[in-house]
Length: 235
Image (tube, rainbow, N blue to C red; front, side):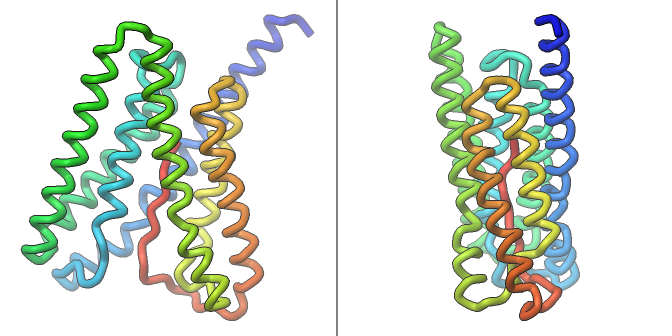
């Protein structure tokens, strides 16, 4: 096999993994919809927290910026998945602002402004770095750190499942979507030779696998419905 053919196969595999990751990520983006149906039906955010959506928005914006040609080359599929993810999170945040009580509303709006401010600082600050390799390393490190922290967020759910021996608060479809998305972008990062993508998604793959193992282990003693939204990061 010639080097050209090997390169072509690698590029095809990378694109296929990226497209698959975009598709599987959609399952994560729509996972809070039942929660917001309940919020809209009851006209209140009740005890639900808006923090996961705020943090997820920041994560999507940072990863979106990393995927642009101004930061890294040939990562369009990272940009697309995080653009869609950011749009979903903005919709969820605005719905939360509409139905939240005044104290929550003020806090959420303040956090939203803080997230947008942080992103603007990252965007403008990175553009001031003239060396493209240093710029990529800086934004890549921020993206990697954000993804790892997002993938680590379900750890408290894993602890809850082990303690209660129930998967009531760990929906199967969400854990499965997380696993599939993580492994897709892990392969995408490997084929791109991009550690800022394959390292965090490799961690996400392991954590997703642990969630699936726990789900099947404790499935019999669990109820079918979940009442708490879980948000995991993308790309």
